[in-house]
Length: 122
Image 1 (spheres, one colour):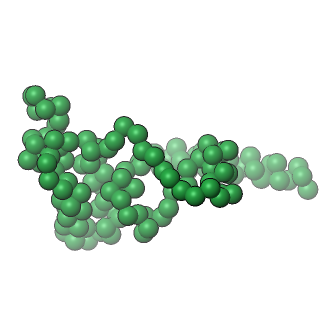
Image 2: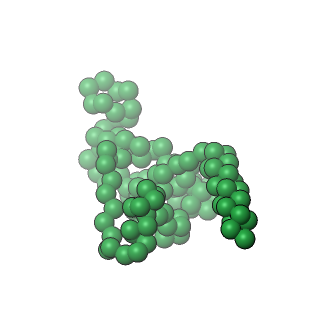
Image 3: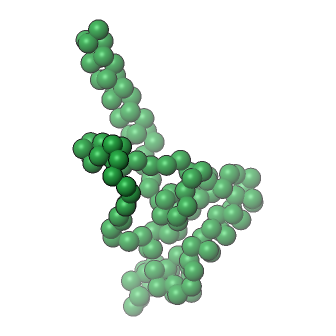
């Protein structure tokens, strides 16, 4: 951490929370350069660079959307709907990271439990 500014980066580095310019522009340019140089998709490059925007993350994020049956379902089940990366339009959209192995195990267990319940209903 650089002394006196509570950041791991100098204030001239877009990754610093003390950066005074448009950090999102620089981050997206870096992702673009990385994708081209490494011959990867822009989504892969953005995923690899998600830690570089960590200092800019707010403590709270709010999602405002119209009241619909789907929004009520999300509230009742304590879940959040996430769009596909192709439809992301905000630099925070792709910050959510997960452990793929844990996700796969959880998904598989939930699927088996649903199949057991479904088979008992038949």
